[in-house]
Length: 548
Image 1 (cartoon, rainbow, N blue to C red):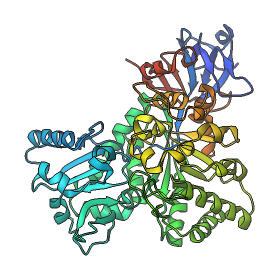
Image 2: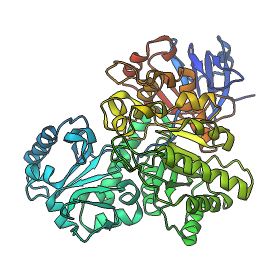
Image 3: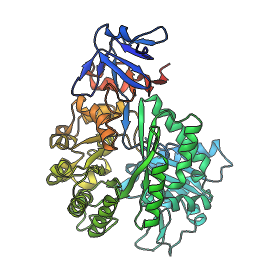
Image 4: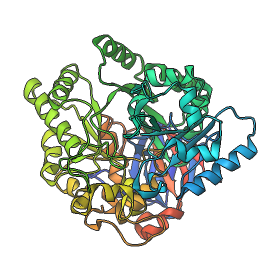
């Protein structure tokens, strides 16, 4: 006799993301897997006296969300001054002043999420901008995208950065062209500051933000948030071997209530010995709860400070079009070598020239090694030349994208992103619909803490291209329909990390990762997505979140 199901949800709108049976009314779970999908009262044959039976009352039941690019380890830090939404230097100063009043003995002032648009005149920030607010207290502030860091004069002194310093382990020092003195602005922080060497250097300098206990608090808080938002699988894309014990600790302490795939950072200069250590770590961590494997690389940086690589110069510039971190030929050989060794590459690329360099490298790897189901990713795909749209499907490259980033209140007209590329290139901005129509696999994600972690925020933006307050859509021809956007947050993201046979759809035999929402998204206006919530989160048949 077949044992009863452990959990049944019925009277639901079950959106399965399974093309063989797109819709059902009930789902039953046994032994951590989907045991049955069906309609009406047929579920009663699977229920027993100990079965938990949930009447969904018409609510939407979905596969658990798979967030394909979520920096849970970086997270948001309660010990930092929160600068999100501060639209002027004066507002930044007011928030720092509040911090100083509440923490008068703090050795450092640390802040996060400053917006480039808060700096007047479209320029980048300087130490002088901070000095009036901070005095002689060393101050370290991260941009909202964590790609740049902003220091005051006291922090420059504390870190030993002077006119002779060109680069540190945690960033590239920007200099005043007239005086040659450091401005207090560091670029390449995501590439250097989040690396193994960068974190070690910041810890050695006494920056509290880099302390391992602070890192773990950020991770644990982010993992709790992921469970609350119905994210049953997190892909943490950029880690060093030093960071893996943080995840092991979270698993041991019961804080890891989502599956987690950890990518390892591959900076330029990574050695064969490093790759051997990466492969060994991947062999050690292969469970369905915590696995290690993909490699994260950068080909360019970000658009707002003009460090992404564009095919043509930035708007208002005669020649500057950004740089790639590797010469194209070198990058092609690096990727071909990783491909031959069986690694999957996640490559950060935002500018159209950066993206083309990655696609050219994948083409070279396939020519040298022969085609294989590598599923290399271009991560972000912010400014894509139309000529390169069909190449994603042709080369089997996954487009890992973050819908919230293309919201007009973040990147649209009047914001630094749109102004930097110029209106003549706005048709290249986050072309999700074009990629989908061309057959590319979309893996959608939050990029927390660059943007909100909540998948419902990403879904709203994907289907509207509007800001959170509404308003006019930006580039509305590139919106997605809801079913396509949901696939990007579930099966598409599972496919992106070779887990589509276990995750991403409600299919009998797959792991029982699912969510029940407070509302049926197919029956409400997109603006109401922002008021919906996850009522129930299930991981491997175990309830890991209940609203209220």
